Length: 314
Image 1: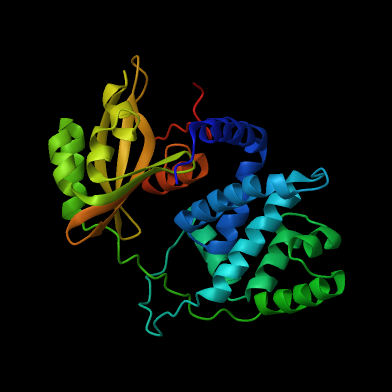
Image 2: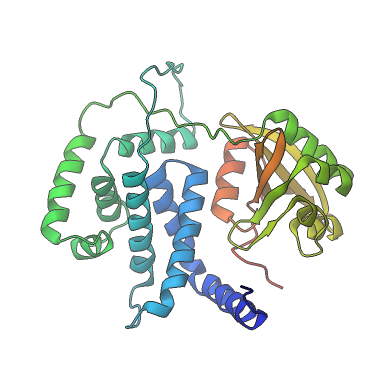
């Protein structure tokens, strides 16, 4: 069954209005998701899924939403707790010992804090973050976690006590087995810099997907490489001078997309992550409209960044 244009078009208009209205809340929402997940990529996924779930539920809300921040945080909390209940992660007991650092960098301090919170069960972690970090009241925390004030008080007591216990060895994040190997990412970037659409097409599976995170999705290798509406078309046709560069970020090869225009300083304006299956690209994810993720990754890599807000201005 085809979804008619008279539904798709208005939905896009309302979605962009929703993004615009909620933009002031996005930095704190991302910070909360970052604290919950301990990963910049997982935090962006959780924040995006929260926005989609919140938007989808607007038609089901009977009363006006009085506190938009609490509304979004509640959805993020429930999504994250549900996922942890469904998918339990197992990590190796053998963790390599890292050499001591004389002066920790900001991202190392943040990661250490994430590891500290990671030893708390889901509800306790969310309760401590909401109450002690994001200054929610007990009542707001209970509402966000679909609980009672008494249960939240108990969760806070347990969680705070565990945070004062001697730390265990930090958990090791599972690597994404679908991440592309460095050679494939290098070949993608070479074709990107050469504006070689034919080569880009040969690198992709027929069923490949491409996503401008939070904005649109395309399907099919030929469509991705040749579509007049897609990321590659807009990048190649842009008056900006784009170039791609492969960098290692926490053991994953990612693509930094640099841009310069009208003599302005060149800076990273987007990031692309690449997944592969059977030696070909299965998925492209562009983080153009993800300012918090762009800022964090570029800060850790020590490169200049240009963020672009949460939606197009055109």
